[in-house]
Amino acid sequence: MTRLRYLPNVVTLILDSEKCTGCGVCTEVCPHGVLVIESQKARIADRDACMECGACALNCITEAISVRSGVGCATAVLNGMLRGSEPTCDCSADATCCE
Amino acid sequence: MRFRVEPGLYAAGSPTQESPVLVSANYKMSFDRLRSQLGGLDAWILVLDTKGVNVWCAAGKGTFGTEEIAKRVDVVGLGEVVSHRRLVVPQLGAPGVSAHEVARRSGFSVVFGPVRAEDIPAFVSAGMKATPQMRRVQFPFRERVVLIPLELVTGAKHALFLAACFLVLAGLGPGIYSLHRAGTEGVQSAALLLAAFAVGAVLTPVLLPWLPGRAFSAKGAWLGLILVLSLSAFAWAHPGTFENPASTGAWLLLIPAVVSYVAMNFTGASTYTSLSGVRREMRVAVPVQAACAVIGTGLWLAGRFF
Image (cartoon, rainbow over all chains, first blue to last red):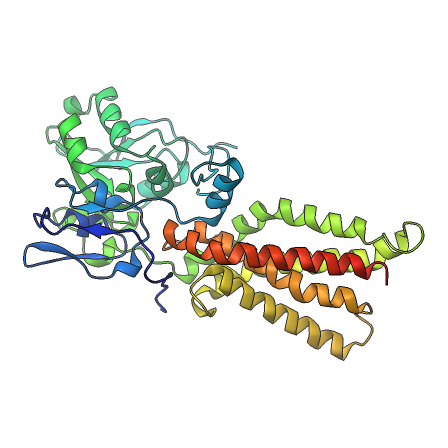
């Protein structure tokens, strides 16, 4: 099928190779194959596929990865603007969105 | 309506103290999907309290998270039930679950399982190893179209309100309020708005990979232009459909604005948009949509008096 791609050159993903030990957990948790292990180090192979879910950064034991994580949801951004807060997905337990 | 499962430890099949422990959310559909895909595998299912939200969304909020896993392991006394010290956490839970933190706090190591529950038997029989394919999230046609009813239901309230406003305002004009105008042009206007909403909510998911542009708002704007062109072709074939030049001009702006806005809001249901990307597209799209909506509505209102 046609591969879906979002906007290029926009994500906040940063990898510090100095701190990377090449454990590979980031490649396991990434749902879009953004990171690969090469010569015992992680490398960002497909930056534009990143959706900033934050799984890699949260699971990096040496804190070599940073990303400003969040949900890529326009409704959440609009909710946040209306309330003057950070983007908030209004998925309270009874809401149907996100389920 | 509530679709929740009581958090706690459940048995699938006849698990022993060596059986794997699969972690799940307490959204009933997540839990049922997991159970139905085990294919006879004997396993423990540790259901977290995610307030009835699915794994991926709950992980984004942190309710499917490190803290809750450590707490739930403790509450159910998992250390007494199984002899091993390993949890299989769905990969899509990883945005909320820090594997090394869970290990530190609960003594259980975390193995990230496949994205899809259907791959669990293969994952387990391969010795808890996922293929790269099992780790990837796609957004195929089938997964997009099942979201259509939800898109229609969540947007319907706003769409119906907007349509009702236009229906009522259509009665304005020279002289006194005209029920006749509300019944003719008002009904037509309401129908056009609802059509624009429906096109955005239905065709965005269906045609997503084939619509031009990467920004969802751009994809929606194209859909809106196609609708406008179709309506123009219809009006050309049936002279007199749109008698009022001002309101005809209004629809050229209003329809693409509405469809673009509806499509933009589909970003949240998609599986590949980043927050930074959504913010970038909104910085351009929202002012354009708003300008089209304001000018379009102004033209339409002006059309009441000509």
